[in-house]
Amino acid sequence: MSVETILQRLAQGEKRAFAELVDLYQRPLFGFLGRLGLGQAQAEDIAQDTFLRAWTHLPDYSPERSQFATWLFTIARNLAYNVMQSAPQQCEITGQELPDLASPQAGPAQLLDRAQRQARLQDALRKLPMKERSALALVYVHELALADVARIEGDNLPAIKTRLHRAKQRLRKLLENSDTGAAS
Image (cartoon, rainbow, N blue to C red):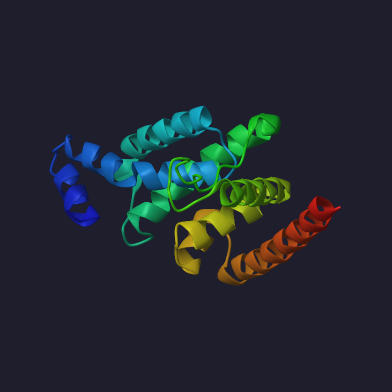
């Protein structure tokens, strides 16, 4: 069922339709929050707050101004920024899950190599400024259009392009430095 249909049902007073929105956006929202550097418990709390605020402010949502996903991710981003500014030491980057240890395709050497690369990537991402991590996650993980990322980030398109370019450069340097440090 489309988001527009669900929103129409909500506008007609069918409150149960909101559960469908939660089902539709819960996983992408958790993934986004995790890639911003939040642990699972923090991501769950912020996701819950995000949906609560979306419910409370649903009458303020305007499809003419942005897509629902953009509006929802903006709420989540703002809540995450607030949490991360108040307790930055508690945040941790989460990435793709490692393959199942029982997987016949991956031997111990491949699992170890992947785990080491994953740890280096997480460490490098952790060193990026929050706005750069957010832009990278929205574009490359959630595959949002740059215009949507600009709306979520509250910036213009050229600023987002510049931020992404700088983030990729910094990430590349951080990973190169971690590779030379790992080889030593």
